[in-house]
Image (tube, rainbow, N blue to C red):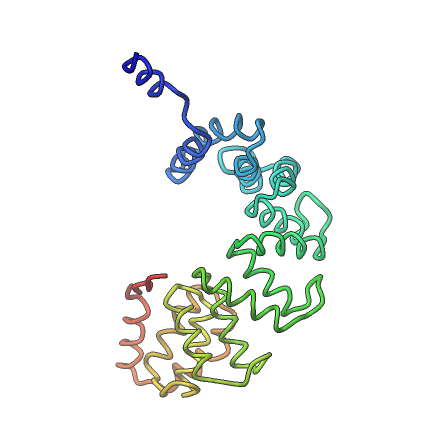
Length: 262
């Protein structure tokens, strides 16, 4: 009888969590057909995360034709069920006006719902909206709180924003050294705007000893990452260098960066 029970346990269907994990593994390999085949029955049985994942596939055209209407339908189900990733993804559609009328206020509400559940990218976006007053009343203290929360989860763009708060004295005393500390954190994680601001600080000697070669190297990285901020400083930084220093900065800019541990 024990043997029969053992066989029964081995033959038992995988749990929803196991199925979601298997689907995610397939998606990471680019096998969206397999992933969608697993997600669909789970989504129809009420799995909010599976509903989100299907919605995301329709939103991005992953394994299916891009369809904003179906993306909206599935993401709305996930968001209504309280899935934070579904709330964040639906917020993105509302923010951009894809498949639904553009609505910054609704986007902010959804980002806040996801942020309060600990979703780092939602915390980052909510911070930006609070700082810019996009569809929501500006609140610098709240913007800083959510930026710090997102930064604590390794979101590099949030680290850059915290640095900007110290640079611009928004809700905190102006502290160039603290701004540089945050920009360096962001830059090492690949955030192009953080790299641009770190490069600018090294060029100007603001909050960090001036280093013309390091400045130009970071600005080159930022430019490659399409940061609009890099263009403000890159010509002046280059003009301060000799030909040998330019070559060294270019070498540094193309060398790999070891991303720090979270």
